[in-house]
Every structure is written in structure tokens, then in C-alpha cells.
Amino acid sequence: MTRNERLDKVLANMGYGSRKDVKKFIKEGLVKVNGAIIQNNEFKVSPYEDEITIRGEEVNYREYIYLMMNKPQGLVSSTDDPLTRTVIDLLTDDYLIYKPFPVGRLDKDTEGLLMISNDGKLAHELLSPKKHVDKKYYAEIDGTVDDEHIEVFKRGIVLDDGYKTLPAELEIIETGVFSKIYLTIQEGKYHQVKRMFEALTMRVVYLKRISMGPLILDESLVPGEYRELTDDEINSLKTR
Image (cartoon, rainbow, N blue to C red; front, side):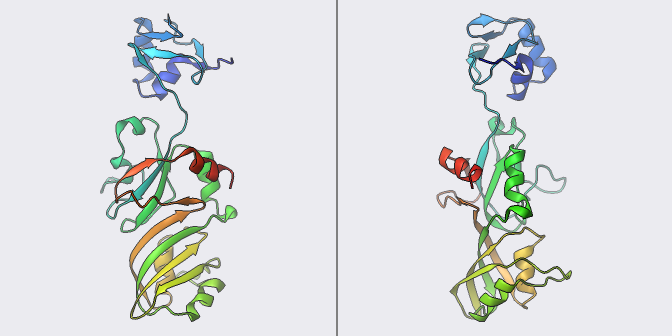
């Protein structure tokens, strides 16, 4: 067993107080490692293998958390915003101690799949444009979307700033003056889906992300609810 983490750091990372607080707890003999009282805050532990307790409560250590949220409208995809509530405000304290952040962004008025984690490496893998991760949306459009638009999206669309998007996959669910579609893109430009349709003189009136890479929104989650990813879901993201 390799012991390479300082005891005070492990406890502080798990939200048992500041580094100063946990040093005090350790000095007072409130912390045990494998049944023995440890009063040296620099004592090295293996947090996944040693049994650590504080005031008799076992510390269940883990480095990363992975959450799936059905983001509601009205919240921003940020860790902090001075003007409005964020998706992080919906989380309970037992998750906040891990300092999680949204993996990617959804517009304030967009609903759907939002992953929240503190795993920066995985976030980079999912968000890097070079990785070409599919992001699938359901949208309701004020305008007639027909078969000719499938090829238009496949060729890429020039946005209002002159940027030409990567090829996108359009699936038409219902067409008419008011249309319903699925759109799969591999980028995350500002308001991209809305701007793509605006370039075609149409307007997105409802937008919901339903998948990101292999991760599919759990439809049992009502807007604002979240759950931890299953081991299979985590593995699918890491091995994609």
C-alpha cells in the first residue's frame, strides 16, 4: 500500500473544514487512521485504502464526481454569476465540496443534458474541438424545415460573424410553418444552434440537448434534477 497523501489535505478536500480547521481536529485527537489516533497532520495515508474516521464518522474518499443534470431554463451554466442563479446553485453541499463545474455550456433558456464534474481532464476530452464529440439537440423551429435543409446543414452554415460551421446532421421530425427537428453538431459556438437557423431566416423557439457523445439524457430527470453517472456511463465517456 502506497501512502502518499497528507492526512490534513485529504480531510480538507473532503469538506471537513479548512486546512487550519482539520489540523486542529487532528491535534485534538479526533481523527483515527485504521483505528489508531493520529495527531500528526502530515501523516501520509492512502485515502482509498486506509480507514479514516473523524469524530467516529468514516471518511468515504473519492477524487472525482460525475453528475448528469437535466438543466432547466433560467439558470446559467457557470460556477458563479453575480446577477443570476447558476446550475451549481442546485447542488447539495455534499457535492459542492468537490468544487464541480459544468462540462460545457447550455444557454440560459436552453434545457437538457448537462454534465457536471470536477474532472478537468475528462472535461477537456469532451470539449476539445479536435475530439469531434457529437452533441444532439431537439429543437422546435418557427419556420418550415424541409428535406433540402438536410444537405444545407451537412455542408456547414455561415453564421452572422462569417464563421462556417462544421457539417451538422439534421433530422426532421415534423415539418410545416412550425417544425420539430433533431440537430447533431460537433462544436459549441455561442448560441450556435439558434444562429444556424437564424442564418436561414428561421427562429428556434425551444431547445433541449439530449445527448453528448455516448451520454444520453435520463428522461426520468425533471428539469432541475440530477443524479450521479453510473459506472457504465463514466466508462463510456472515458473509453470513447
